[in-house]
Image (cartoon, rainbow over all chains, first blue to last red; front, side, top):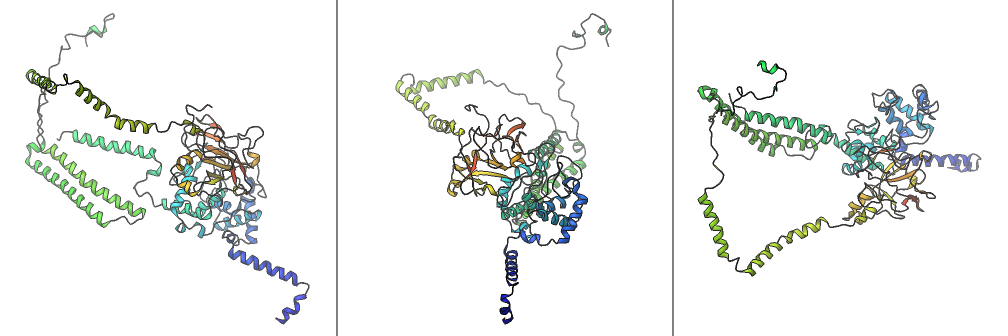
Length: 260
Length: 348
């Protein structure tokens, strides 16, 4: 203590104090801050570097050498790690071919490479981070409230139970039954392709988890039995007219036929 | 067949009197064919056993249904409910279909299948019966004295004529309960009313909307107001889709000369389609197109919600918006024109 007291007039003392204060503040922030911040702590400088290399090999042709965007593809500065993780882990990016919509396909990058790319893009500008496990845990969400939000914000394109649907000019809203919880959250947060953005002010993180809980609950199927694709009157009508009426006609023929 | 048919100049459609009789004779009932069960007692026995078996299956189905009802209760999960419903339905169907199939098979294979002709009797009663009936009616009228007692006649007719009004008046007046058509012209949007997220009702700050956002918007209202009976109708008319575009992408909106109805790339348009009133909400943020799910009318949100495709006739009405002192989005006024599809008293 004495040694410390003796050095308090040292010329480096203010700098050391400042550094200590910053460290404490930073440390406290890291502990107390909302979870998105923690997701980014995983990336290191080498991840960013490796991600940059991957970017130049796979993405720079369309998005420009520094992700600044070209007439063909948007700038990726500020889209955040969440957008990269969504696009790359679902195989939408790198894009297979140009068309009305980049389709999901088996992912081209492994999870490590995806994380490196995400780290690189996140280093270019602040953007939404990859959600934590807790943020996407469907068991913590309220699916009833999720249904309310889904009906207002999502059902018009994605169908009332998330079976997907058609948009204009060859575009479509994909079915949600096999989309991971992580990707569901990221899609709401970043608004990929035709989908609008639903940021945390519009649908709060808790509400996003409610929506995920609702979608996950739909995967148990319908309590009423066969859902016939949940497409409504088209498949149900086809079933009723072809199978239902067919059976009735068959029964009528059998009742009317003479026994031999 | 006949050479006449090929002779030129003859009317080939002329009836050939020799080939077609004036009137076909009634061929009668076709000759009766005995069934296997009629001639072979073994076959009859076999069918009897088969029918008994089907009835037996029906009995098993009924008992199974009761067992399932007690044994497989819905446990609250979707799968549990589905299992219970499916088992109950299947066993019930086996029980009821078994009865039906067995009964029909019984009738078809074992009951008499001889054809019987039962001539229909004439519809009219005999002249004597009719005469008696008319006489009874005449006696009744004479007995009531309706021709002589004018007051009674008037009173009875009045009572009979007035009674139907007791249900006709309430019925008709409730059909036309509200003929105030001008209410279609206005919504509950008014100057300085805040825009709020649907369904949570949180007010929206302009700064909270990212470019590319779409928000489904209702007018801000108190909890009591939102629980009131009128709210659902008012909300249905007032719903708005709010989107934020890149300000340079916004080519035009509907604000007249000298006014600004949008705020920094944020535009708000009625969500009720101008075609037949479906909720238009399929917003594609890259093309700024808004698609109506009912008839594929497409509106360009970057260009005053003009119709770019489909049967809609007019752009979606724009809600003029601005921000208040606290940065929340507020309406400048109600919509400048009636929302939704055309109707008879709409001037435009």
